[in-house]
Image: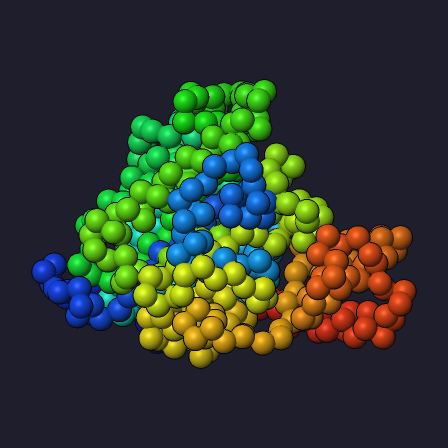
Length: 448
């Protein structure tokens, strides 16, 4: 039996027999591993939070989280859309390696999902004795065999599609999509409230043992529905996919502010249970905002490889470990969360496959620079490469007229001044590196 088959054979209930049995009364000072919470917003833009300059949407809890930790100014999702970024987050690998280069849609998913031989951070932490839970959006496979409980999570409440009605929990093809572990189980309530309730309950239930909590919010993805609205989608019915509200800007504000309140409740649960200093919290968005939100001064929106498509708000907090009030310009990406949380848990990354992210612990805990690095993006016909402060964008590889766009982001974060004609050697070098990267990350199925 190969290593991957062995891991899968113990990933379910049998893994609990192999894990250390933590006493509910164990003193917190003797906690073997810190808790880990990852909170992911959906389609939240770089300019949608107060701590990133928004004057309209009130986000006091996320602003406070930033004030007590570190706020990133140059953090990126690995793709400008949902499913691929989530595949990269789970594995620390470019999503192309995982065969999730594009959105897994409700209508055309074709039994497609994150391959079970991929190793998620939940699986790695589970083997250390962590209790693992995910509440909210999965979007890494619709079929039951891709359920989060098959990918290292002990508990799952939420939906597997890209979005659901916030009240009826019907996906955009008219299918019911609200799960309790691997079974469909309807639940009344506004999705943001339910995600928060389950997250807080998970913290309270597991406050005396190490836990890994993944809170995957739906907000502020469409349908644009605030907590005071009512359900619009019905099973098999006809409905406006993005919701029926005409005042979308107000609905969007309500959705972000409700999510922020939920973050506040999670942080309060940590304080009430006296585990705030035992818990690492990381918040970010899966991609940039649509035109309904704000990407600040950045060019482009969700789905594009301009900065507005993938430069996102990101905040890390760990009281007593991460110095409060920091702002960093270090270049980081969502792929970095996988090696970061494993280092926090003091366990190595898998050595049988390429891991593309790097641990941010030296930045968090020692205030050390993570150094210069090169990052890549590829989505549909678009390509981009970032080398330190230089960024090359090819908006459409099949359209010769789209040309090459080269920017010095240290001086031009808005991507207004194309320097490609002035730096032909650099353009050629970046194209060669991008081409080599695309060859390297081509999907090759591993031994299952």
